[in-house]
Image 1: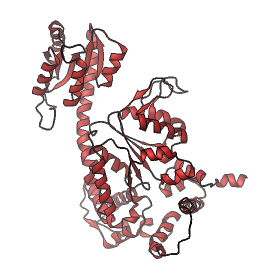
Image 2 (image 1 turned 180 degrees about the vertical axis):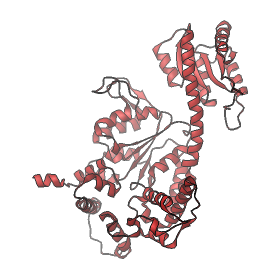
Image 3 (image 1 turned 30 degrees about the vertical axis):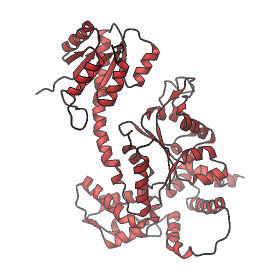
Image 4 (image 1 turned 90 degrees about the horizontal axis):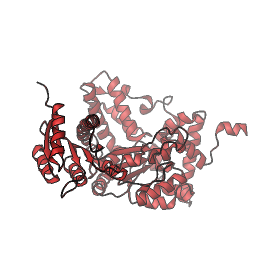
Length: 492
């Protein structure tokens, strides 16, 4: 049995226009209805939307509303706002007899699928309706994806029983309903992206976009365009207008990872956006205003970068409103069995296998390993073991060499962390030598970088992989710590 064609609601205070459009679309096979004002349209939309969990996406709900801008009483623009609020899976096409650029921009800004000028050309309406229906199908798909995101990124899926993780869960619950800027700190792989998703999913913005960008992965010359967009001809290669990440996140949340890698010039632009929620695309003169919640993350202590002069103090104070510090996995070893069990259940289900757990020796090896890549590395280790094991229990033979402690398999960084992990308790009572915080943090980091670079014959990419950071971040750390490239030193 063929599915019924989508229902279209036509709203126009001129009954002749409304009926003629309904007749045209009925001839195309659509089911149509008409309303003469916004109030009648609202009643018809409510009656057709009978779903328990919000607007129905069944055959009786209106897929598209075609509305005149000028309506008696409540305007078409206000009707558009109400439809977006109460019937987010219904797409709206606006019609007007006196079109202007400003009104078209306003309609599209409020979420209209299209904006047509009367008298409507039949072919234009057909094409506009086809685009609207494609958008409606995408909206229905997005609703399904949002339910899947709830399952994937809900706070209940951020696993951990450590007291610091419980405190983080409480902070997420407290800040999620607001628009407050959140700053997360912690090593790479500690779960900053997952926490950012959880904040978004538990906020009133959950039905809007969540946009994520790692500032360290974008070349400095392209970062401004990526964040704020550009207009055609703004620079060589700008062949068309580009919407930036901030505008894409309008109404939703933007997550900026590795904010510590942003240049001073970019930091100044970000400061303005955070203060005013305004910016200009590259090459444009018109200011764009956005309503966006900003979550940021850094894998370096920003207070140290402020002291070094490489991060703006005013930006640091602006983003350090609510701070969430994610501890490295090696400092919360009690969570390793819980996390490992969680990941094993996940991958066992995906592989269609019955893997019941870990042998005592395998779990002991996981507990001892310092996990320089943190939770992300543990997840990869468990996935690998689930794929390779031939039994119903993960044994040490299923774990990679660096986890089981094989010296030839472990990188210099891992061996050093294993040593530090083992002896840190013995050093807790060592005599304190007075020094500045900057010096205390700078010197160990420099030694680690030098040892890792030397062990990898100064191969930056391999060193960055061992350290769990990207190549750009490694380069900036080397520059900040005064570490010259080995090739440069030999040339000198």
